[in-house]
Amino acid sequence: MKKLSKTLLNQINSFMNTVARPLEKSIFNYYFNNSSVDDILGSLEAFQNLDGGFGKGIEPDFKLIESSPMATSIGLRYLSKLDNSDKAQTMIAKAIEYLESTFDSNRNGWYSVPSNVNSYPHAPWWEFKNDINMTVIDYSWGNPTAELIGYLYKYKEYLNNLDIYSLKNYAISNLNKRTEFNSEHEIFCYIHMYNVLDEEFSSQIENTLKLAVSQLVNITQSEWINYVPTPLKFINIDSMNFFGIERKFIDQNLDYLIDKLVKNGKILPAWQWDKYLEEWEIAKIEWMGILTLDALLSLRKFKRI
Image (tube, rainbow, N blue to C red; front, side, top):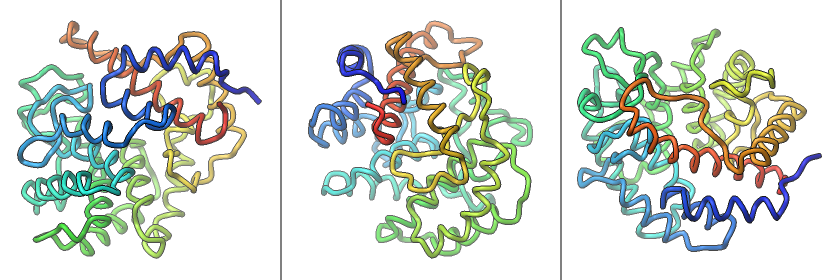
């Protein structure tokens, strides 16, 4: 079994503390250098707007300054793991207020990003088109709506208007009525929802998630250099359920990450933009920090360091 050496971890420590964004730097130092959770909250606060939503490029592939549901799902994803403080709860309450104010009753959820995303540098897949049926950002209802419903359920004490039980039931039925799946990103969001629901509700989608993962997970190692849904993409750092992914494929994925870190000292993005190329060079570096951190957290979870 391969393990990441302490020598290499020290080298990556230097990369994370000199090149990565303050957000990824603070998360890395929290898990690997015993720093304070306050540093993470301070870094997250820099991405939260006055309306409570998150923006300002927290997702490096779109540089929209204003708030968006997609960016807010990322902010809440971090906050949900670090919510044992008054500051975190205040930030969460503000984000919930934003989500209530932007809820689209016709959609019974949220669109990923607003149209003004086009006014800022962004990857081609975040281009907003007037005909919603043509735009790739809305090919699946659950991305990010399912994940957001999970956070609304977890922090329902802050809700004033939305019927979270109705939304939760809708999300569950929306998933369970399907037998074929073509969007790993939507399933990622459902897995985030699964991880924050009470067991009596998460158990209702467990079998469907196993089916979806079996259809979507890429277990061909030679293809992992491309942008594909590898086994570890379906396993969050707080996940207890691997949704039917065999341990041998998880181990192969962990070995693959170690090999990449040995070779490059970081994890490189497997994609690029087709315009805004100067901004892409900045986003690329930001993604290196995010992807390297994700790899390290996976290795830590499975005791490979």
